[in-house]
Amino acid sequence: MESFRHPGRVCEKKVSVVGSELVENYTVYIIEVTDGQHTWRVKHRYSDFHDLHEKLKAEEKVDQGLLPPKKMLGKNSKSLVELRQKELELYLQTLLLQFTEAMPTLLAKFLHFHFYEIDGITAALAEELFYKGEKLLQDGKVFIVRPLQLHAVSQQLRFAKPTSCNGDAKTDLGHILDFMCRLRYLKILGSKVPVGTSNIHESSLPFDLSLFKSLHHIEVNISICTAHAVLIGLSCLRPSLTTLSIHHSTETMMSILVPEAVEFSQWEAEGELSNCPITAVIPVWSTLTTLDMSHNSISAIDRSVVRDASSSFAVFYAANDHPDSDLRTSHSQKKGNSSVFNFHHLHLFRHRSQDNVGEFRSLAEAFLWFSPLQKVIPKVEFLDLSHNHLSSLDRIKNIGSLPCLEKLNLSSNPMCIIPDYRTKVLAQFGDRAAEVCLDGQVTTEKELDTVEVLKAIQKARDVKEKRTSSIAKVRFVKPAK
Image 1 (cartoon, helix red, strand yellow):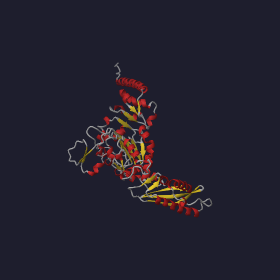
Image 2 (spheres, rainbow, N blue to C red):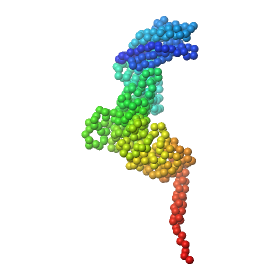
Image 3 (cartoon, rainbow, N blue to C red):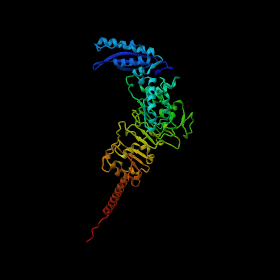
Image 4 (cartoon, one colour):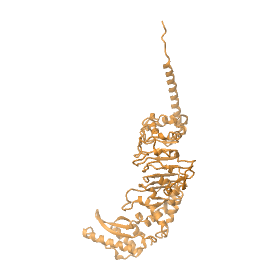
């Protein structure tokens, strides 16, 4: 019969029934399971025990008299419940002693090993990918995984043990490894609170990302401030990764982009032109174009963003919650700001506020915030001013003067409710209107026709104003008598 085996890893497992609850007209028993330092609770009524026992009798030849018999009268009485609590605890403890090396899958799932215990977690994930893995890869969708699952897989690989903990081919670890090697889009989603009914904090569980060989996009949201201690092998993704998003997971950019820097007193990025003595040359993120490190506790943009002389990040997102951060949504940080020392390595800096509502009320105000970057602003190709307080078209006057701007995002601003908002914004770009993508939508032919009309009207107004101005300058001299 299928069973969970634990060779190569000594981890004491205990079980006890610690209490009970009356739910409607039946009693639920509270089971506490301990696996090493991890504990969790499971709730089952007597009928669940009975169903388990019947299956174990048939499949594992468990002694028929091991489970205490049913009681029809007074089954919810305090004395019976307390007695049965002790009997059910003895029942489970006897089963654990009987199946020390190979726990039946039925018993493992009854005790929720597939949620909290390493072998059970990997077996459940492997079986899921056995059925759905190929379709997930073909569809190219983002695969969401928890840190606990990645930790379980990493731990499995540390031990010399069979790749299938229960002898079932569907639960073989190979299904997970094959899927990880081919996966392109990954999201790791953790939580601040313990997992389920356990004492397991995912923020403290290390896992190895070097198992992923083909990732193009990864998003990490673990709600910790020491991700470099958890995200082992992140630097192994340098050859393939194009988008890296790290949220609620770090205090420094260096710990994510150049984790090797802690090992060397002096280092430089591969291809960086430097005359300083160095002890190490660290590879750059050669394919990475989008870096999103918003919603962390980062206080400055450090030199970890340095790339080789011929490349830079196409998009960089920031805005952090550090109390001393220069990347907060505050207009008090203007010139002399240490956080902008490495901005020249970025083609785009996108400002995000902490509450998803920006503070800019005009384009001039936004550019004032970026005052240390005056040489960079004319080169901006993608400008995102969404979720701000831009209330009228006058607030973005001269937006069309940015010669390289191709993508503009003004969504979720008050001005968006203005009639013909899109065409009025596009008209500011004049002959370049067709080249501009506004709010993620390509300019249509109909909009271009309207822009031409608006341009003609504006031209007529300019001619009229010029003529009026000329007439006003003419002085009429009263003829002498």
